[in-house]
Length: 340
Ligand SMILES: [Zn+2]
Image 1 (cartoon, helix red, strand yellow):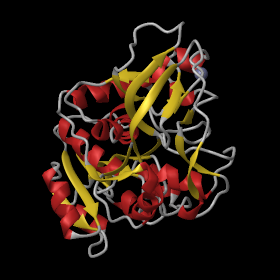
Image 2: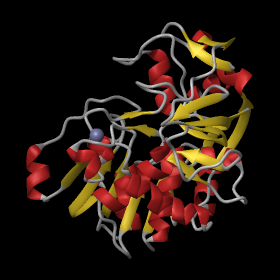
Image 3: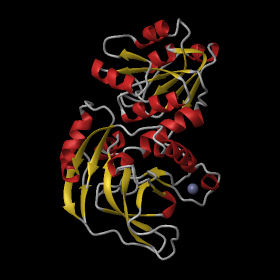
Image 4: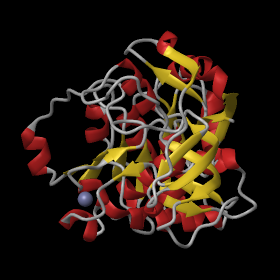
């Protein structure tokens, strides 16, 4: 099959389009012919070099396609079925997995991180991560959903316990995870304030349901939040930006408020005054991906069109390098998807 592989860590130039052997279909696996694979910032981190990644390596976490073959020991699936893959690897046997906490499994990793991903034509996977999709959902749409919607759902619903009528600040609403978070917060009838780097992106965020927009290059986030909320602050800050925004995120919270974070795109080191944390009774929550239950729950809303995939543009698999360069420029609104 054709695949994009990296043989060394580095810039977009290390992505090689080449012929590799087809994956073997074990009796307990499902072989999926990949039709679309969405990009995530994780692809950039892995390409630049993360501990534990074995070379050569195939990137790509968000996969949709058609079942090509079904192992003899697998029931419930048929060739040609349209599916997406839960973007994760877990053992499915340990105490965490059997409690439904797959993202706390010792073996947990994201597809395309410590295990091979979807920047290729075929992938053999265990049946527990194979999820049929409705006919009306295109492969590019299906591929653009799993990682960001799962991450945003786990953050807002499972970790932060969002409730109707709360006010939520979603940082970088133009990102994949931000555009998912805006929609999920609106599903809970929250009031949503978002930030973006230009007026065009703020308009698109408003179209997704954001009630207020802050230009994070032109305006100070916490000051604008104070104005919008009549000096109250927000209940939840949806963080994934990291060092560049952490202080503003803290200052934007109302007493008793919660920051939930899944990333540190601008850097991992944030300092804060412990007195501010305890005196204002704040909660700082970490979140990483989500569980299979979270995924099924959020997908039920996607399949019913209450949550919508947001695609910026598509590239052919051969153009993966150009797609990485485009992602690194942060010009997009929503997801970048590779097609096969
Ligand atoms: Zn496990």
